[in-house]
Image (tube, rainbow, N blue to C red; front, side, top):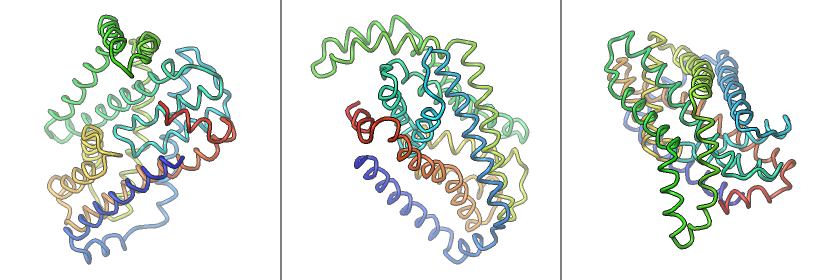
Length: 321
């Protein structure tokens, strides 16, 4: 728990520095004036749509656990899933493997068995968001090259994870390395679950659920723009959000902080033609409603999940992994 607190504090400090730089760049007066336009009655709708997107992702999470035959009591599973959102600030959100450590504490399922579900979540997050981005790119004749690059990377990654030959090679290499040799026996379990989860049917189903879930979040992002009085087409805002989010993930910075903000501000300024102060204000609100709202839910989830995993035991297991 202390490590999570420390990482959160570092991420918050970095984020504050990034937002301060952007605010100064845009002109503090213009930034404050833009934020002052926010229509507060839209806030419940924005956060409600974001929550709906998490409900959709929880449905996908349960589906993936069902595919690999792992059963977790509903209440515990909700808490475990929510706790994973605290890792939205981890590079590529891969810290959500914390959920696998908690499941191990609840029912004894090896982490190597359920960790591929987290990988499948990230893969279909990518494919779902790419689809939304492509809709925007095609609607406004924006260049789809960056989105297609991310899609190609996802396809290559899926092929690598499903490759039995590469799995055997990885197992042999790990078995010969000091300190890492203990991971070798888990490679086959990880590969078996990955092959199941990244097969055609689960991949299509997961991408479909992801597309719908991201649709709720994209709608929340669009409402952020409406709340600031920005009148730009829905799919234009979606394209900017999709590309910036994917760039943030690709940067492997914690939560994509810095990279995603730069992408959002730059494209709202250059592509959507917003004044710098308004572009930064909109970027700030979008990140509050998506990244930081998720992190807050995750922190609450961490406290709740302790009731199911016996206090600090689950957190200790997660740190050891």
